[in-house]
Length: 406
Image (cartoon, rainbow, N blue to C red; front, top):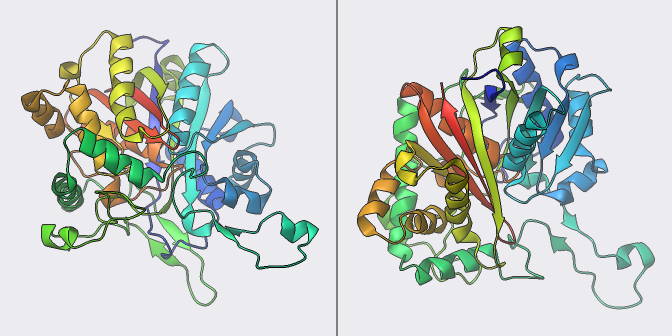
């Protein structure tokens, strides 16, 4: 341990709520602000000590409701000083992991000591979008609105992400049944972890109070997306979506609501503030591939990361790969194993051990940070160790982070 290490001193997230659920009317900037407040409260760090806020958000259609610049608005709502510098980041689903990576790089560049890496998203709050002719007028014919969340993906440049993921899975010999099995595993692993108290308020989770028009607020103190009633039979009956050969609503996550955040600083600064680090950020890596290859990106991002760190996947105690679809961890684990079936099985044994986004939910701008903190807390329960978190992002991007828990 060195004073120059970049460390995480706190991580927290809201419960994740499903599309159209109880949190559907909460602006994501309010959720982001609540995370900032919670991080400051838990650590006792004053707002004046924050050098910069890096803020991930993907659904820029929702951002337009607030005239964008969401990081700035959220930090002011959180009560941080108006002098606090911020940056809103859109790297699709990678956005909040990119925020953590930027904090890591900026500290190492000597450009500051204390940073917040935040991600927030409310996909239920994204509007339908009117075409430009609404502003300028149209002489004849219907006016067609665009739904900002359906289909998921950037369909003007590539097929829907679900279609791409399903096709890539088949190329790697991973069929519908194997993807359904992974989805079932995710739901059951989450239930086991929840019963063991791993998703309790006070550690990874905070409480959210949802204002009501009449009466007291609704208190949300647990994830609302998990489906404990899931069975392999029910998963097998679901129809595929967006012309995908294998992806269904059951082996993919939801269009969710939630926020997450990390406080990141130099170890020396943590000592000065009397804070015990949870984990050290060791290395990061980012990649991009052809626009239809989304499912491979965590695998190759992790390979790049481990090469930089002079390590192999055998040196890693736990992995978190975002379940953008079940296809993603399945394909990426096979890539990490170089196609070796025995090695693939060993990698999957230490992958998403407490369930993943298929159970927890995937509020896209918040998921990258969620992966890092879920990994961090589980490593600490096991007495420390080394872990890798990785996520894919729209139009085939990928980020990965290596941490060492203390």
